[in-house]
Image: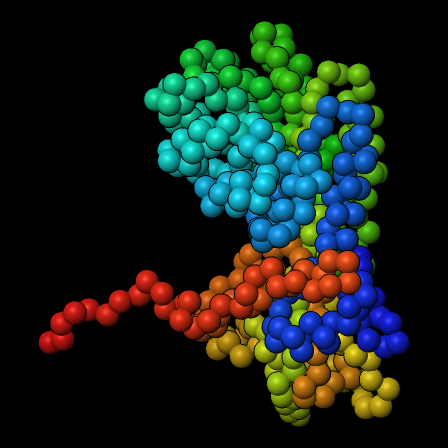
Length: 418
Ligand code: LLP
């Protein structure tokens, strides 16, 4: 994890002891490092220097306004999937002409707003969506720049829930149908075909599936050229994995070098949509041990963080390291299941973890910057937690902890009893 390290037995984010963050903001709490986010983005940007390329951060991975603003200041583009994400990006200072709009079910009002602000490209996922974009653009008196998300039918070799490039996934248009659909799009009055995109899955730890997809898309681009359809940019989506435990994913530099080599001197602009690889290892979630419950069969550490705060372990059986905020010399290391207060057997953040614990200890759930807070919920009427950014040795609350009153806002009781 970048920017998180022990100093004299105490876990720090940059110069700030994480125990101080817990003291000031309570737990559970997400803590992010501005420096780590910036470095991860610059890894992409620098590897692409001198090329016609845009890094569009996938907002879904972590959509906090402070995160978006940090990236906007560095000149990032953004990949959005909803009107909500569009509003966030604009509020955070992102430029409309650097926004691409992905997602399988874009609604007419979302398309209209995106056209109104002048986004760069709609990544279209079906023929029905093409018709809708063409119609809405016509009604608005605009011409929409579009790309098709082509499903190349490659196996990304990742968890089935986050693998998206196989032909039985809901995403994109089938590669075998792409030529016909592109030709149809070229005949429509209110869309302008500019690109081709794909996204084959997330947390990929090998380059090979990306390269297979790229080969297939380049063949398709050549085939379209013979029909008089010029593709100006190729958007390879996101998906580059990170190290959660012992994975060794390629670095952005290695991945991009391989892509550039394959492209040779083709006059193709490039777009990438990384999410996880920008933010995952730039964040942790701090949680406190409430009780230890040691039974004959198992040791449980009951912590104040739960599946509603971080759902990846429950939903995908995802492994995220869990480490003490302060290292302890005395005491006994035991294997614990780290479980939350939510009333579900599936409510755990880690199983069978070797830790030396006492009630009251603080723990850091690692690699929690991506798909952490954004996937949290209010299940069990648990307020969503605070988010804190460490910037230059200072801590900033970039999202206040919700209150129970926040959770009940908008709810009403029926006016009359029986
Ligand atoms: N572009 C598109 C069209 C996507 O669907 C996604 C992610 C990305 C980019 C960013 O992918 P990344 O670089 O983050 O892999 N909740 C899951 C991950 C779901 C990813 C969905 N799509 C998790 O916690 O592992």
